[in-house]
Image 1 (cartoon, rainbow, N blue to C red):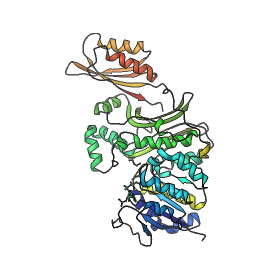
Image 2 (spheres, rainbow, N blue to C red):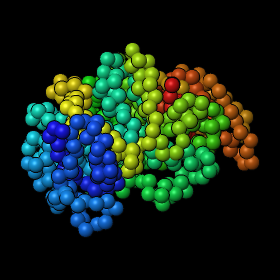
Image 3 (cartoon, protein in one colour):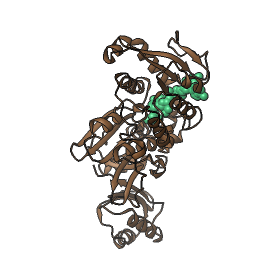
Image 4 (cartoon, rainbow, N blue to C red):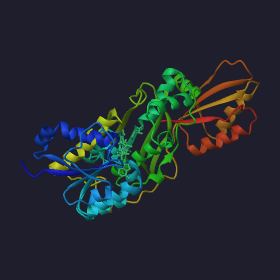
Length: 428
Ligand code: NAP
Ligand code: HSE
């Protein structure tokens, strides 16, 4: 056996404990696969006395993750604390400055500081790996940086927040309101400490920004991601979309266009028969499209102890084997500054609104759409007990600008009984 790979782990929560368990339980397998033992030298967390359900015997303890990162008896610093700043950033910087490779599951850290950290690591001849940061157990970073490296990536798309997918699919299957399922998700422990990271689309937006950087050779640009959460989705939208043959997903889409880099993490409709439409519960799915490969679909668990630790270990084992890709697939200094798209690609839209049930009301709405250059593909008006008729319209492809003008015009007609809901239908 050759020299062991010595690691220090900061963060012994869900993911950190998963990593310790794999290293303890599969020592022989890991050594056989890499040709060298993987040794935990030291660990750090906030509370030394907490029972974590796994033995930490034989590992040095550091109260301060920065001190752990600086130890001269480790080769790899594994950051599993979380947070875009604070100890995660300080310890990662310290690890790079003192000559360690870094493995992290922290999408927030990299979405905000990925460029600076990658440049620092490359200057020091070190690498940062982050498979676990995007879509948990799905090896999507490896697929993009390695397996698909010969492609021009034409589109990256996916459901990358399991909590949102759980909420949306549970609303549909149980017929429950958003608030009821949100509470259920809370009881089940699915939500991040700040739930807005999940339901506000921020966590998934972080992940999309990281994938975009690799796919398009651009610096990570989280601020350039159009973000919209799922908090405004009602059970009526879920049912109406289903009636028209769609499912609502918090969908991430990144594509390089002639108008710049388009990055969106917003609720969208997808055909109910498509792989994305059929994705249930907390599972993640990432669709990668390249000029040579055409399309691949990756599906799997996006969170949890085992799946996330599995991804962390993939990175650790690569380092043990001497596999050292650039953090974002090419030298960080050569990544172009991203130019956010000036407008979105045209798409069909789903519109839902209440309409006064009186002669000419629907004609006025159709005229407003027509005058904005929007053609109606399908329309449905539902039976109703009161004076407000629920109406659904699916448009042909239109631009966001034309749609916004039509919605503004519709509001001035004095025939709507509520605020219209407009959701993009994604072309799959
Ligand atoms: P967690 O269960 O909350 O664990 C966080 C760990 O970090 C705890 O052990 C905590 O110590 C330790 N910690 C926090 N602040 C610290 C500090 N100042 N100094 C030392 N230790 C500190 O979090 P997690 O779910 O394992 O997530 C870890 C990372 O993985 C995050 O970046 C997260 O976004 C990412 N991730 C998680 C999942 C998942 O399914 N959980 C999936 C993908 C990615 P104590 O235990 O003593 O409090
Ligand atoms: N909160 C995330 C999710 C898991 O629900 O998918 C961590 O990435």
